[in-house]
Amino acid sequence: MNKVKCIGILTSGGDASGMNAAIRAVTRSAISNGFKVKAIYRGYEGLINNEIREFTTEDVSNIIQRGGTILKTARCEAFMTPEGRRKAYEVLKAQEIDALIVIGGDGSLTGARMFADEYNIVCIGLPGTIDNDLYGTDYTIGYDMALNTIVDCVDKIRDTASSHNRIFFVEVMGRDAGFLAQNSAIASGAEAAIIPEDKNNADQLDEFIKRGIRKTKSSSIVIVSESKKDGGAMYYADRVRREYPEYDVRVSILGHLQRGGSPSAADRILASRLGEASIQAILEDQRNVMVGIRNDEIVYVPFIKAIKEDKPIDKSLIRVLNSLSI
Ligand code: ADP
Image (cartoon, rainbow, N blue to C red; front, side, top):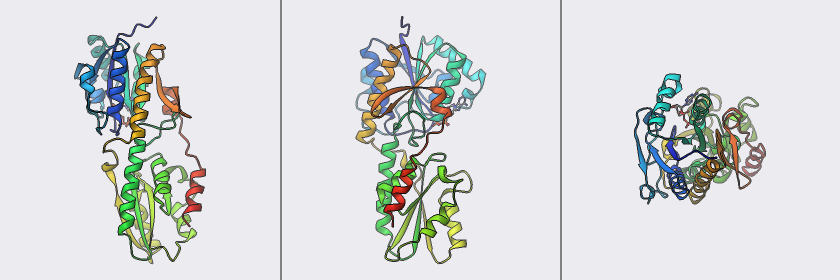
């Protein structure tokens, strides 16, 4: 017997293009199935502060094509503490919300998991992050759009690259996951990608230089995943200046523009399918799962797996890039 009557929805952590399409899908699908929907603004912060109002189908009109999130997003220190989560639970009870749909990345789903462990509340996660780093789903909402944006930028950078022996380091997001770097390198015809997954195996800069830059190439583009330390485009540019002074080095850090923009068709479709599936999950009495997609089919992934297990990058992608960039 399904006791859920009212569903709360929030977006949390880093924003990603396609979150609005997911909010629309959750809201409309919930209402179609007879649930009440309450929108929670500014992630867990807004939950704790009771920034909540009921949503109708009209509230999500004309948003499928918009980047960002109409619910706003936030990072919330208080939700990391037991007291903060207790406050959040009290707000949900007072609002008569009995299921929570969280759209966000690894951190947001970690929070949802802790919350669901402590309190009797149905929690469903949707993978919303440009990094594509959640285990158990082939794609996350926002990844395709970010990838396309990076490829667009690299195409433009290549247009300006004309002098011999110039190396451009282009830094992209993905601190712990190289999906954006590796696949944007393949898609833009870059010469190399430096990704966190390969960090301990080899000195990726040395490997790239050793492979040699064809003399007829007017420039080389290396896509680098951002990094907290000993990594990132600046780090590698400095190393080239010191260790290989024969090269002229340029750096371009793409930064926040990777998050924005009207979502791609692929992200809108993914967000719509996952959003609709999250309501099906509630109807099927699922709880504490992330709704994902694998081999083009909807799957339910227990939170613990989605957040604890590292999603491996297909190592054949490294071979593809290396073979094609000669
Ligand atoms: P993302 O979801 O994009 O990975 P963050 O890592 O910043 O973004 O996480 C978003 C929010 O999720 C945090 O501000 C916090 O409120 C919540 N969160 C993250 N990790 C935890 C945790 N270990 N326990 C409880 N809440 C967490």
